[in-house]
Image (cartoon, rainbow, N blue to C red):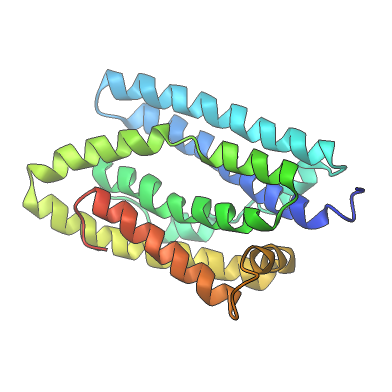
Length: 217
């Protein structure tokens, strides 16, 4: 297939590459802010892994005839408003934002990937299946919350705010990017209302994440 046939795939691949690039910057910053040297070393490794994942996606864009720089550039500010509206006030809020807030974007990409060609879908799912940073966040948050009921209540509220803002990002993407709507519709071919099914699944995934931490969604 040529570039035109793969144009929708290039749109989603560009979004995934941008999310991995943002993850690299975020993890590098987290490494500098982490309270222990063990966490700093681990987070720096996660940042390096995000670069490798990003480059795998960029290579797929090139492989199917796209311009990887242009594909990423169109999403350059995709999370700017989300980040401006969800500034964490503590290390624990920062960890929860990474796990819950950015997790919504990853879930959206997984669901949209169901509409991709087999090769592109495999790349996206492999890249998004790396849950090592999520496991660190879960372990740290679970340990902290089990010993502090006030922190648990505060984080539950923070999680609800994060998911609302993150779903707003998805809504804007669907308004602005018809290609993503087409991919979601292909992946939800058995549904009479693909967007409704999509948001239902994103909310369910969020609830599962919060439940892992013993937090009310």
